[in-house]
Length: 302
Image (cartoon, rainbow, N blue to C red; front, side, top):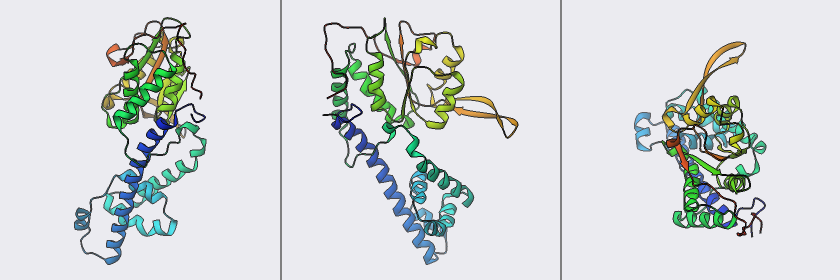
């Protein structure tokens, strides 16, 4: 059986469980640290520097996430000592907490498949990869070794922020109806914050990456990418984390200012025939998909 997204429950559960476990552990560590900091503050210990060395702070993002869920009165008691311990101004901490609260309030506007609950138990990596491999082999006729390469790239997408290099997954075929779009739809439900688009503009792509940090899945790329040097440059810039940005001039409050936009994010591209003049060593290139008339696959339904 499958849920309405078409993803087998065992695969969805493993992916969901992994993220939930990580977030839960980070938030529990943050909660323990906040309680310890508050207790030491109330006891009036003389030297805060020694206190910070006693219990090192956890991930800063997790601390802010936990603080954003505190009632106003409790947060007001904590904000001063926590900001001092983190080495930031109270106003900066307030801004960070407010931003997390606002993001949570607008969460309902995000696509439904972006909502993923982390797993409660550790996932078996080898079993997860094998489940993903079987899933793709059931739904798509893939070229040799693609059923291994695609699951590995999916794990890359989930661990992207810990990587320094991000190759672009490329799917090609000699003609239409060879399974590229179906593969991209499967990727949409198996990668984090994924966005499947059949066309994107040069002006929108880096702004969308900056705002949403998506896994970007570009279908029908042959219809607009071949003659667009600027778009190819933007996509190529996202290969290396250190150089994954572009700079543009924006009008803010009537003034022209320069602004840096991130291009760092996992990307997959599907297109017919030859690749455009992308830098080929930047790509995670699969063999071409071919139309098969004598093979039957599932269309993602139970």
